[in-house]
Amino acid sequence: MLSNLPLQPNPYLLLTLHCIIGIIAALLARRKGFDFLRWLIIGLIGGTPALIAALVVKPKL
Image (cartoon, rainbow, N blue to C red; front, side, top):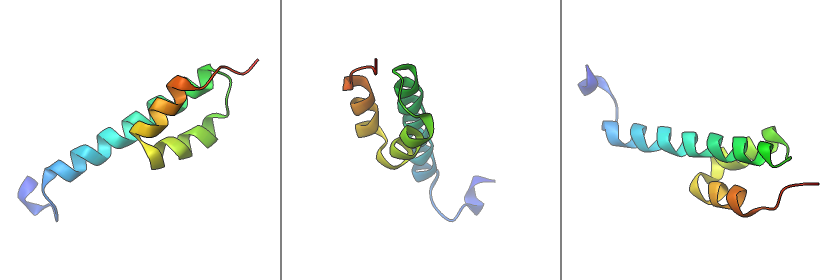
């Protein structure tokens, strides 16, 4: 079943983890008062750096 994939399964796993990290970054930023959709786009593009940025950014007042 997996042999019909055009690529090895590893890139699919890495892409999935990258997107999950991006979604977590967006959820974290939303809890701090930022726009979810904007951070979702940033997170899906940036992945781990977006998660680090969401952790470091100060909450909106």
